[in-house]
Image (cartoon, rainbow, N blue to C red; front, side):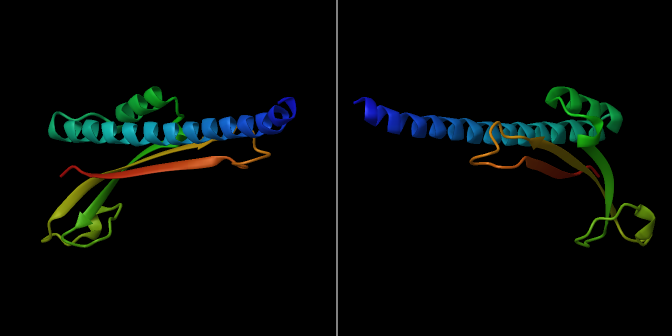
Amino acid sequence: MAIETALVAPLLALMALGTFEVGMLVSRQQELQSSASEAEGIVLAAAGGTGTPSDKIKQVLQDSLGLSAEQVTLEQRFRCNATSTLTTDASTCDSDQPIYQYVRLTVTDTYTPIWTEFGVGSPITYNVERTIQVQ
């Protein structure tokens, strides 16, 4: 019985560590996706009301996720009429075309596995991007 345990116990420990690592990866991805969804609501509410500065929205996201200012970006984008591409400058659109305004939210983070010698061997970079039409 002791020999079987000596053979199986290390494999079970590796499987437990792998399960923990995958759980942490999925958990952080879900956390970032959920925060991006909440940020969409904040952006839409701010656009419909008196307006909330993008710095304040960024600060709320940074505080709730424990991220730095470089990891959260909010950018204004425009779409001219029915084109499929977004531009950073509304003046590039023809004046007789409708101009639609968007906010692009990007949240980035990096997860470094506990044990990089086996299994997931390098840090994982998350990049969650949402584009919200506000006008």
